[in-house]
Every structure is written in structure tokens, then in C-alpha cells.
Image 1 (cartoon, rainbow, N blue to C red):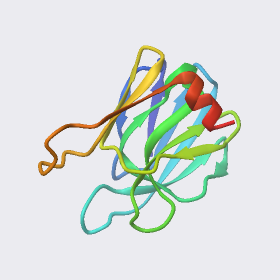
Image 2 (image 1 turned 90 degrees about the horizontal axis):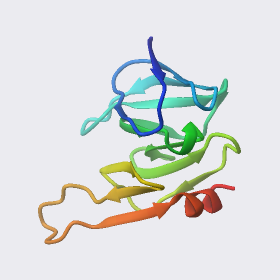
Image 3 (image 1 turned 180 degrees about the vertical axis):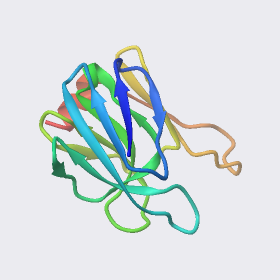
Length: 141
């Protein structure tokens, strides 16, 4: 198991093909990602536990960000194999919001998270969805 110490809420992480313990120092939360498997076409996926409680579905072993004082988790998610979505989890309430589509990339910018569509070369323009902290808070309370 790999232990990761997270001291800020701006950094993005790529976590794949291992079991992880994530210590969030700003919010005093502990997350576990238990490696489950790899589909034939992509990243590994993991069972998520928040403060020792298993979370429904699986998170993909790719981008993770812990914004807004580390009180939220944004990552790739699937409730059923292999339907990939992007999820925002409020680590305080354990409630979530699943975005209607999968976003390949996301990052904290100012008081918001910017989500960018997948690297689909067939699309002429890149779609960017921006959710402010207040919107995210409303979606996950």
C-alpha cells in the first residue's frame, strides 16, 4: 500500500494500479483506494473508503483532486462496469453529484473547478464546464 500525504487543495494526483491510503491534512480525512482490477481498455479501478466506510461504485485510477479545503473529492467514477463518469463527492456529508458526462481533465482554478471534455479528436472545439464552489456545495448537500 502506498501512503500519500496531501497538504494543499490545489494539487492533482494520478493514482493507479496499487492500494492507496490518502491522508488529507487540511480536512483531517483518510481515504483508502483498494485496487480491484483493470478493464481491457483503460485505467485500473478501485473501491473507495472514506473514513473507513466503503463508498458505492468504483473510482478510476487516474486524476484525483481534493479542492476547497480538501472537503471534496473530484475523480472519475463508475457505478456499474464500465460506464465512466466524473463525480464530485462532499467528504463531509458523503453526498455526491455525478456529472452527466465523463470529463477527461479537471482542475481547481480560483474558486471553481474547470472540467474539460475528453481528448476526442473528432470534436472541433474543446468544451469547458466551470462549476463555482457555491454550485458544487449546493449540488452535494
